[in-house]
Structures are given as structure tokens and as C-alpha cells.
Amino acid sequence: MGGDENAEDAESSYIDPERVVVVSGPGCKACGKRVASVVLLPCRHLCVCSECDNLVQSCPLCLSFRSSSIQVYMS
Image (cartoon, rainbow, N blue to C red; front, side, top):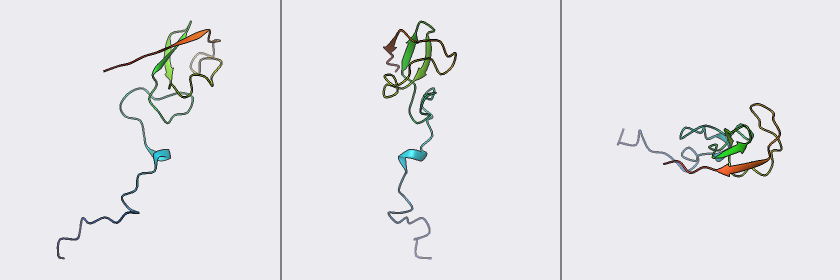
């Protein structure tokens, strides 16, 4: 009872990056781990992160073939 009720050890305070839920913007529809920051063209869906941009050949939302993409910076 000496004020240690809220004390944490290193193991209990560890945050597993694989289990972090995206809350700061739309989630990537390819990996589900990061914020979507790339608009796919020609469909114009903002649905993948910059890491998945080069991995997807079609839009995960509408399945249309992607011809190019644009990185979006939101503030």
C-alpha cells in the first residue's frame, strides 16, 4: 500500500506495434496497420499507406486497376 498500486514493470508497459490500432486517420485497407496516405488513380480512393503503395496493383476498395498514385499530406 505504499503508493505502488500504479507501478508498472517493463513487460506490462511494452506496446506491441503489431497490435496498435490506427486512430489518427483512415486505416490502410491493404495492411490495416498504418494510416492511409496514398490516393490511387484513376478511382481516387484514399485507401493505402505509403508502404503498401508499391505492393498493390488494384484498389482494395473497388478493385479497379491503378495507373498511378499520389501521396497525400494532411495536417
